[in-house]
Length: 269
Image 1 (cartoon, rainbow, N blue to C red):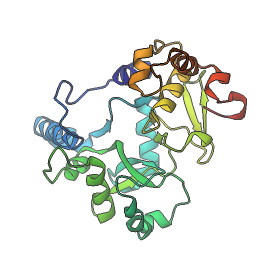
Image 2 (cartoon, one colour):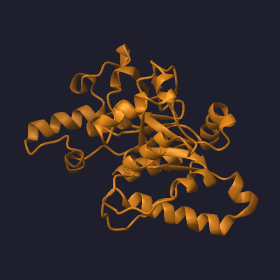
Image 3 (cartoon, helix red, strand yellow):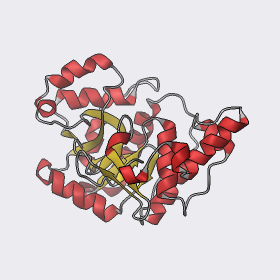
């Protein structure tokens, strides 16, 4: 169902999605590096010249991302925020230092980390965009499918020579983990606002918890997405074998404020 959310919300915004690796057997999160690297090499060989040099690419996880804005808005905000960075690769940022907690000490020693007061200050590899050649340059090492893709990109960010930036202010992307208290969902505009950064991100990444992503997506796009079934909810880890608990979860996803615990008037999801 996650891919359905991505494709449906992309269609509403006029965004055409190309799914890379669909149907490929999952052998570990590191396979994303292999599959995306191969796709970039194919595109680079096919386009070349000016077309390749001007190309901006955006990669998103296929099963927990919703598109809230148009491609034009995404490119405009990217250009406004990172025009001086010459095709910088911008990753969405999260509040959690993952996959290795101790890496926060390496982050703390980085001038970019010290210069921001944002809660969203750690790299998350689920959504990123940038000039195609700069993105292609990130895939300069072959690793096994068991290798953690976020660890791979965090290392390149901390090295500091790959032109990676983090979307500290959530202008482009919004992660959900540990963020609910700062987000307001507007179902009429199909948008989320971040009260801490005063931004309206273009892409929403449900990096956790799973139920929060289901709730907010259903609230934003209730008229365009089918109601989640009990089996769908179980896949998200929300419903249980107990019928009453499953019904409560389904009510929460449907947008019942009393069931889901969020109060629209107070700015909750």
